[in-house]
Amino acid sequence: MLSVLRVHLPSDIPIVGCELTPYVLLRRPDKSLSSDDIPESAPVEGHFLRYKWYRIQSDKKVAICSVHPTEQATLQCLGCVKTKIPVAKSYHCSPKCFADSWQHHRILHDRAASAVNDNGNEDEELFGARLNSSGSGVPATSLSGPISGSGPTNGSITFYSGATSTQRSGGETWFEVGLSKTYTPTAEDIGHALKFECVIVDSETKLPVGQPSTLLTSRVIPAPTPTPRRLISVSGMDLAGHLDLDARVSSGTFTVLSYNILADMHASSELYSYCPSWALSWAYRKQNLLREIVGYHADIVCLQEVQTDHFEEFFEPELDKHGYEALFKRRTNEVYPGNVNIIDGCATFFRRDRFSHVKKYEVEFNKAAQSLTDALLPSTQKKNALGRLVKDNVALIAILEAKFGGDNPGRRQLLSVANTHVNVPHELKDVKLWQVHTLLKGLEKIAASANIPMLVCGDFGSLPGSAPHSLLAMGKVDPSHPDLMVDPLGILRPPGKLNHQLPLVSAYSSFARLNVASGSEKQKRRMDTLTNEPLFTNCTRDFIGTLDYIFYSADSLTVEGLLELLDEDSLRKDTGLPSPEWSSDHIALLAEFRCKSSSRPRR
Image (tube, rainbow, N blue to C red; front, side, top):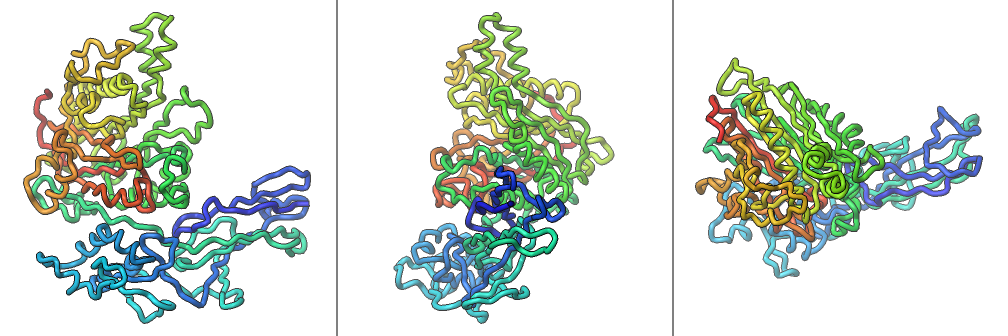
């Protein structure tokens, strides 16, 4: 007879908006084990599985800590209440939690307050009483007893009621909230535990057979939301609303986003042990990443480390709902053969109301390596050479046509967008440089056939000042560059061949050239003054540095604005990325561009 052996969830902590799919292990009548569903429409020997989800609502209402959402709140920031910040962000689980998060939390106050007192006394005057117990000088009040409905009403509160009751026992009410195997928690579930029930049912009588198998979750928590990142003007124009599509349509500009989203197959608890398991799960990260990406309203989106199955089953259909058309190039699988569905690649999306697809080029560096070894090396050396050069990396180049008018209305405006991930071990400096050089030579051929603006986006796995970065940003590599010392195959010789004629400039270097202005000085402090690049785009427990770039052809494009950079201290408060707020170990880069009315000669 059919029997349920085990039910469990990959993560015990449910999050609003993130689908819960329990693992149900069955023993079938033939004694085999299976985790496949058995619906009423396809019973097995007269039996099927019935599922139910309940919300367990206690008579005591609970507020949840905004920093540690698995903990109950014990105090509330009065400054948030007075400045109309959403109530959910005002709760903390302890005085230490509040004090430790104050530097990051105060950003909410700074953005909400209409004025700041230069003498520093505004906190006490504006934000109310201080916590005597902590001595930290941070404004808050303790919470004692149940939360009542007479408290602050601004923002979204962390407890709800209103569903139809199904059962009641010992001060708890059970609300039936789902009748399928999967369930996605809603805002009404916040602060309450969920119960999953699975029972075998007789197909004829429709009655349960035996006792149901159940599991209880911890309290549902709201999805953490990071402080929004603003678009900073680098052209002297007011770009306050330019993350909004309507503003760009009227101004004739467009935005480009580049983001390594951290493939699920690389997001291991061993590598990112500092990230809570629930925040590292793909069920949570995919929704958080989608919210972030959609929130930028970018016209062109270049993503790296997108698994094939995640592209086909999630990103392509979900971004289609938001008006994006998709292109994808999966990495080749010569080095790591296996399930092609989980191999990652580069995905480029563009708004179909702003651009149309003209042509696509795919670069497979494995094929380039084969051609190189055939031309340069004797057959006896090819195997070892290919073992060094073949890394399964790819690049995706999309030729798009703008549907909006720039400085030349009526003229056909094309745009080339390259998206790549140079995923090569750090010690193979020659291979990194060779792959970047190969990509640039391919782009030169495109430029020769059509003089169009170019964007080169991605994770290049190379720090500012490295040979690949120098080649991209300067058009050449100094023959004395230390990276050229690593060249066992002789593929970088002579050094004079390491050049290109594309007038590429790093978009974020525009921050370094800014005069002191509103918001710009803070961004300049987050730049490396020697390389004019961000101090970091990748931030983990073991590494912090810049690996991601957006390069543009300066003869045909100008930078109008840049997405503000993040502060290292606020990112590393939980040791590094990913975190509950940011679901990749990289940060997203975004630039706003305008096409020039005419092009200057190439260098």
